[in-house]
Length: 167
Image 1 (cartoon, rainbow, N blue to C red):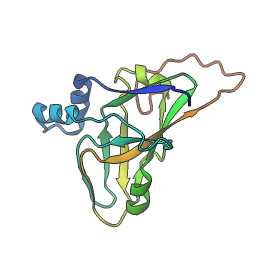
Image 2: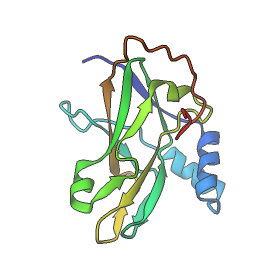
Image 3: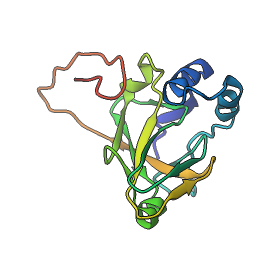
Image 4: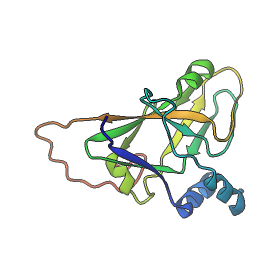
């Protein structure tokens, strides 16, 4: 298999800034504790295609509620590859956990964005029951896939942001 990417933690400063935007009443010491507990995505078995993403803090969602998860993770990806994000199969099937954009797309140039390529995953509890997922539990999975471009493609624009930043 070709080795085409590497997961890294974003800086604490970036994580703290993003966390305070979503959860302004959390003290810095708690944000530091959450950051220090971030686990890089990993495969469960040698035959797994997906890299499991783990919650840095536990979540509780009532039916039809959504949350944005700040993973604290970025991915350095070789050109010509993309990281697709999906819900973990068990949570999707048993609990009807759904990503709000169906499939997350992490492009190779996202790594260089002003937000350090911070991967954020928004999902919704589409089930009938409240859902609790504890800190450190896997909730999403990422799969690296190659992609191609058209013969007449002449794009030269450069990314400088996250969601919706490419127009």
